[in-house]
Amino acid sequence: MSQEADDKGVAAMVLERLENERLPRAIDLKEKVDGGARLDDMDIAFLERVFADTEDLKPMVARNPQYHELAAKLIGLYEHITAKALENEKTG
Image 1 (spheres, one colour):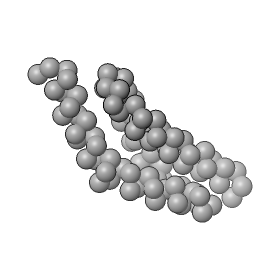
Image 2: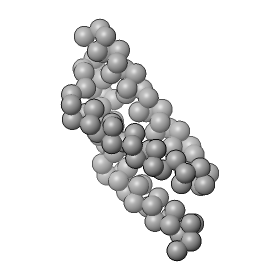
Image 3: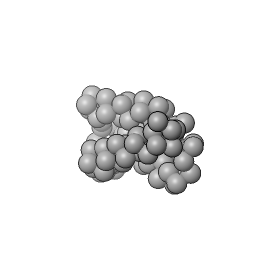
Image 4: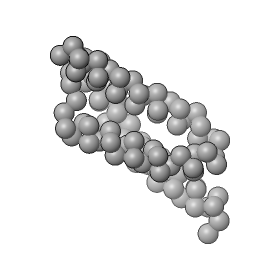
């Protein structure tokens, strides 16, 4: 299988997971931390999985410029969640 075909298959799987699982959960976490709440152990485990998967996907994203903007927006969302969660820990 070519790298391009492999990337398309991986991208389809990742986009489906993003739409059905990751993005809804990330939006919930953003609302949670924006409301001043702290992250619990399950929230932190979720973010750790996301960050590990992100590392694994970096080469594929680098090879496919059509995903750069989406990846940047997702990274921004997760950065916001973690920064706000840290702020909540310090003030809470």
